[in-house]
Length: 300
Image (tube, rainbow, N blue to C red; front, side, top):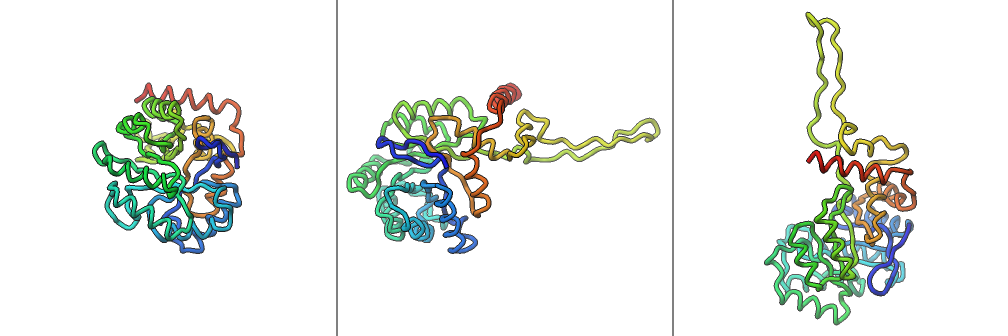
């Protein structure tokens, strides 16, 4: 695992941040703990609770209790409910209750980054921000973050009220996202990337057809359409690399990205993702991706 500076203190954060929540616990508590222990062994020191689910908080707290709390970083998603159907809630009371619930069940002592998940233009009241700042003053949270990909994020970034930006960032991210990231860095915000990979093989497939000659003689079978025919088809043909690993490695070539949030619910998938930051991309692949971006934008 490799590490990058995080926050004004210059602390080191792992290239990968493991998203942890109800999905990781579908196979039981022990499976969730195994996943977290595997992440720690791989050098991951950054974890994201995707909701204020008390069970997930308790399991994460148990796993992290075996390491120095100051060496690991935990972010909590606010506004997404408790992971069990609770409605979105950006009220001061709701977010305070979510933070207190997670701290109670996890025993973590504090939350490193409290992240507001895709608040709408009018969903976040000044009283809510004041409550979060008060919790930061008492040490229950250290930093404030904002997450989302909509244009309203530009307004939130410009307020200067947040310390971190969590943004979707794939290999074909548009100029609006890249400008937003640049604005965030100009304000010394840490940048976390998510949704870095889209499987471009998805979608309707074209069935094979028979091209017949005169009187139906000499029929030839045409192969089905494949992802290799699009601008990014080479992602699926690079030897010893998966398309997902290439996308992850490419996002990490951006020095403004502190960490990439990954979803892994089993140790095997986690191991595959954790290996990507240690590998150097094949020569010329980054340039090939840039050329594909131009082709894709022209075809759009």
